Image 1 (cartoon, rainbow, N blue to C red):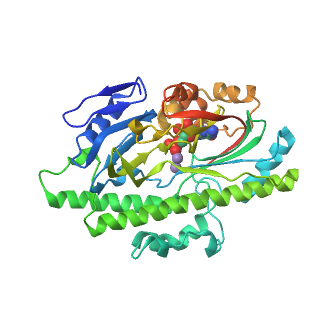
Image 2: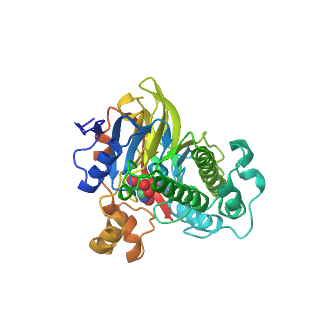
Image 3: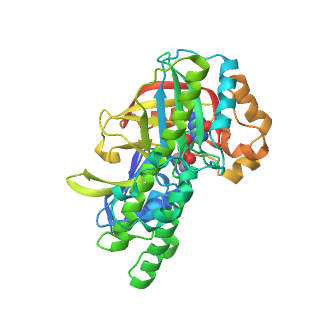
Length: 390
Ligand code: 5GP
Ligand code: MN
Ligand code: MN
């Protein structure tokens, strides 16, 4: 941990030296929530988010906060180690072409519904999931699709002399709907309850868990976490098939799959609490996690140390230094392309608008890893070979 800030209520612990003023103010507001427990943890990749910083960890008792989970519920990473030791550029190019044909990118979806078996079953999450039920048929055409800009599929070379496959995606439209719907309900509830409520401009509307609506949010949120994981699994399966077709290799280790936008019931400091990880990864002792860098930088497979001070969490990536619009404005397309070309990475940086996902838009991953030595240890270092962006 780097430093602690005291507030009128619980403290804030930070795993980074500098944090934008706006994100710091968001952390202070979290610390002042009546439902917040023990302290607020701010990870090494933190930056401003909607209501709560991305890279923030909040534990609550008796209530959940839709904006503390984020709009892309269940967004996360999946990584698989293959039996391959190396890949040549011509084969990588063929893989990208085949992948573009197999996986709809950006806001595209499948033309036909996917079989029911690939969808998580809503009845396993309880009765009455109205938003999920309403979106279910659309979601059957969205499972196995990448989604927008920040999401990616990458083929990497590990320092364990193996080729790795990595997928970053979330719950597509279904999670977005659930997030919006319940935040809206939480805002309405706050209006009804009156003057002691949390100021509206904090964007941290809360759902008490002794209400039907709070319980319903949990069920729908948990469904979306499962859907997002199934979504990554579908894309990984498509990629593995392509790898096998083009190389003959059919050796794939069990996947590592981690969500970085969710809330889960866990025990911390001897209490059962709802841990909100918004752009944060679980890092229980001995558990594998995935910390990507950016397009063109190293990524890491890590092993958690189970540090209670971060509610056993770590960063979910390198984190942004430039907002999307800002990146398009201030970065130079030629320079950013050259950084990637020099490293001979097959990248996705073509147009000005792609600059929002250029290397220069993100923090230096090695500094972010160095800031959290008390949370994780490095298991495998991965160099990018080829990347497809949403
Ligand atoms: P999110 O969009 O979920 O908040 O961020 C996920 C993290 O993925 C970012 O913080 C960034 O560090 C990382 N990232 C973004 N684009 C890429 C990419 O193309 N390749 C890799 N390896 N990491 C990326
Ligand atoms: Mn996402
Ligand atoms: Mn994500």
